[in-house]
Amino acid sequence: MRILLTGAAGGVGARLRKLLPAIYPDLVLSDLKHPDDLSASETFIAADLADLDQVKKAVEGIDGIIHLGGFSVEGPWETILNANIIGTYNLFEAARLAGVKRVVFASSNHVMGFHPRSETIDTEAIIKPDTRYGVSKAFGEALGALYAYKHGIGVLSIRIGNVGEEPLDERRLAIWLKTEDLVSLIRIGLEREGLVYEVVYGMSDNKRAWWDNSRAVALGYKPTGRSEDYAAAILAAAGPKTDPVGDAFQGGPFCTGEFTGDLTKITSA
Ligand code: 15L
Image 1 (cartoon, rainbow, N blue to C red):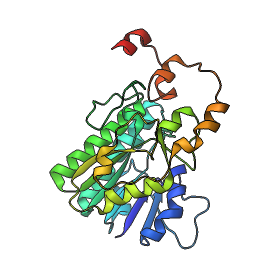
Image 2 (spheres, rainbow, N blue to C red; image 1 turned 60 degrees about the vertical axis):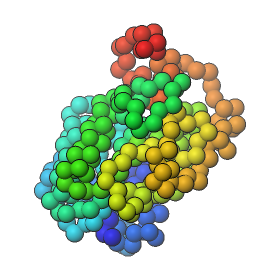
Image 3 (tube, rainbow, N blue to C red; image 1 turned 180 degrees about the horizontal axis):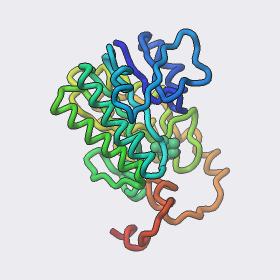
């Protein structure tokens, strides 16, 4: 399979560039600008996701896409609109035109950020985005379902928690995703026979999880990372809780930014 990785110059892209070539030797990288450390063995094509013609060129001859590209945190509406809304539309539209068979869409936990931490949610729970960024990821998931059912592209949306070598803090103990486990989920999206449209949570084997990831397990996911192995050290180093909004909800500080709501009302809803 010839695989396109968008967002290849970003943090998660950099981690995947180390692991994916062994699985998909015919890997094409794309981003706005080439990664600083691009090696001679890597194939790169620059593309602005907001420009359909550029995206069409990047997608030519591709069998499967891992779509990490776009803006990966909260930002001004114009930025989110261009990079994530128009950009993801262009990506799926270029994929349809080029006959791409599979798309793995890097969604985010921030689609569900305003679910309280006291709740365990599965992929049937209603969306409660915590940012314009989270809304754009919900839009991407919806586009994925449209292109899967209407145009026959197999699509997996992965609601990614936080990717890294280890969980960074108490919140990330619940949502940590080891890079190797992300690769396992990507392989399900690109390779699992008969896949139509699925949503899974991008997390490792996390004891403190707020998500029921049984759909991923049913699709063959066997996470290897265990965030609990890091819990004692993280909890010992944690300071006092000072963010009543962020500490109540799964999206953490993404919920707190620009918050002008009624905390009492939404925590008792
Ligand atoms: C995300 O969606 C971001 O892309 C990432 O930078 C992290 O901030 C992560 O969520 C998180 O929730 O920790």
